[in-house]
Length: 222
Image 1 (cartoon, rainbow, N blue to C red):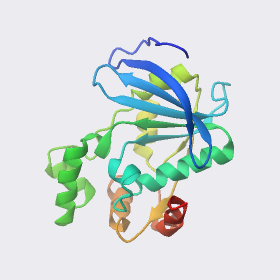
Image 2 (image 1 turned 45 degrees about the vertical axis):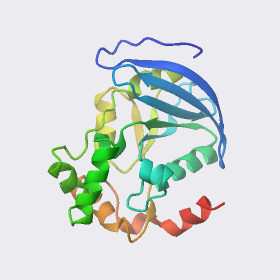
Image 3 (image 1 turned 180 degrees about the vertical axis):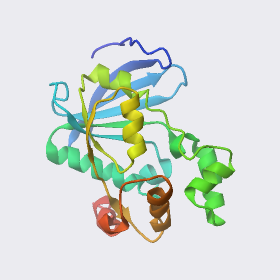
Image 4 (image 1 turned 90 degrees about the vertical axis):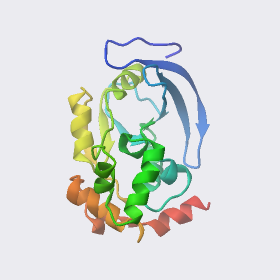
């Protein structure tokens, strides 16, 4: 893993850049950087422990959410899921988190802000994307394959509530051996958003399964 790796995929070109240590409040991960030479976007994989031993790893495929991950937005559950996934991987002592630069389910940050404006006026997250001329979810999962192959990850115990993500990864050849629910961050600002994901996008969850946002906020202040 000390240099660029070439892959057989013809529709995506992922180039390995470098790896470094990344201390976090939960564990010291190894951060692996990759560049998509087709789009110019950079992606990151955080790993912990031996992930190339042939056994499935506890993992999350997390799409970038600047507002939730970095700006502490309570409109979604993205930041809460990100932290919960890292905590679970740290507790297990082994795992991987793929951080993909696919803001707003693939529509980009500025369009995401436009979608938020429509939601402020009463649209739900699906209606807002569609009003802007986008599908409800435009993320790509083929970019995961070269990164997983480079890291020697044979299979995923995938932390997600989204069956479409499971299907999308499997269609690209990713060995998803198990879906692991991840429900964190329920609050009054995202209750309708979460209900929409369950009702319109088929996410396998109920609001009664969620931990409240207050428990995550306490962790964030530490």
